[in-house]
Length: 211
Ligand code: B12
Image (tube, rainbow, N blue to C red; front, side):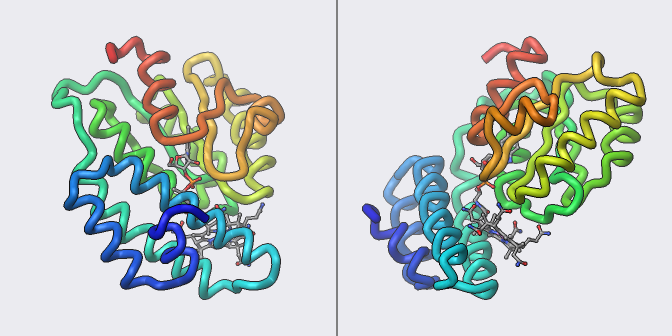
């Protein structure tokens, strides 16, 4: 562990972590860098959970710290001051999965980069994606997930989109901790994005929005 913010968060020192994050942001540190350190910290928490050293309360506490710090960081993220909406993105966390902190960061960054974002929330059944594509007619569909069971949920969702004849109308990106290029291939999506900026860049590429 390198940074004191990572240590405080991973060590469940909530107040210390919040104070440190605030100090960094007030001091002009790049908010995306702060969010990245938070991600590093929750990875440590996740590992300790896997090893049986931490339990659900610690996962929840990590989620809580993350939410508070991202709420502090988000307003400071540079926007491109672009008002006209350059494309529509439909996004949600797939069926069976309720993790949404990363998805919410993606939604936020897409929004400040000029996209019209339709967020379906968490635990989104495949049919809900299909119905929303018909209604919203987005160019891009984003699926988020952190659980292993999300692999199949993503695959099933892509299949449902295919079966309803909408597959060639949308580009599909996937992301979320634990997702990968392999999962993308398994699910039949068009791209995997490792972070929120990747979601923005893919959406720009696919909608022809200038960067
Ligand atoms: C916080 C947390 C929780 C919180 C979630 C709070 C919330 N509102 O989201 C709570 C406590 C509720 C929770 C519950 C559970 N959790 Co949990 N949780 C985590 C933890 C610690 C952090 C996740 C997180 O927020 N990361 C930070 C965000 C910013 O990162 P991110 O999501 O990856 O998002 C970034 C990128 O991936 C990307 N991105 C995200 N979405 C998308 C989408 C697209 C399209 C693109 C391009 C990019 C993109 O952009 C983001 C910003 O850069 C992880 C550990 C870890 N290593 O991830 C475990 C973890 C994900 N949880 C885990 C488990 C097992 C569970 C539970 C099953 C526990 C239980 N026994 O009940 C439940 C699941 C409930 C359910 N049905 O979903 C496991 C999953 C294991 C697995 N492989 O399946 C993990 C990996 C912990 C572990 N190591 O065991 N959890």
